[in-house]
Length: 272
Figure (cartoon, rainbow, N blue to C red):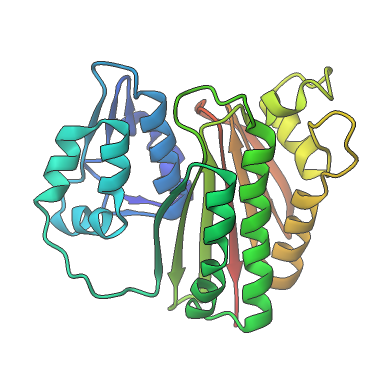
């Protein structure tokens, strides 16, 4: 099972089994799914019966080890799965086509590490100007995490989790930013008391609205859409709560999906 954006939702009932997250059939885990799995693990962290089943394929386990997934497992208390990854041997050679899982717990930590994304995007094939712009998009997504969850984190785990992958054969880049926070609905309901569900809340955010009462700003997601779609014929997708909204050059698609803690946002870009 190739755990890309579409296959994740097609197979979600096979992956989420109560307190168990089952990745046994996974053969590759894309950034969106990688961040989503981290949020599912965080949500189950307090459960004494929590369990993660690693992929059966040794190559997939090696990829997760290369992504430093073991660090997340250690942080969240999935000790048995972490010990199994510890036994996996990998090459320490650099792979410029992946960005290891990054968990920034605090806003200043995120800001300090943001500059390295310029180099990453240049390694991924973008020119200097586009690498700067792509990094600004990551900065906007990360800053949103801390702005809208300040003092309101639902669990003991805070911050943003970031993963990225470059597919040189198709000239495509995926970068996902997730957080175990209050989500779009939780962020916007004070400023927009009439918002009734997660999809409506996501659409309000994409339209340039902010949940910070008294502030006019909030155009960041609007700019991200324009940049991604107009410059790179790309796609922006956001899953928050049980709402999923996908925006590309054909328009906006929305659907109700499995409920998650917090939010995952991703932009996919194509370059020449």
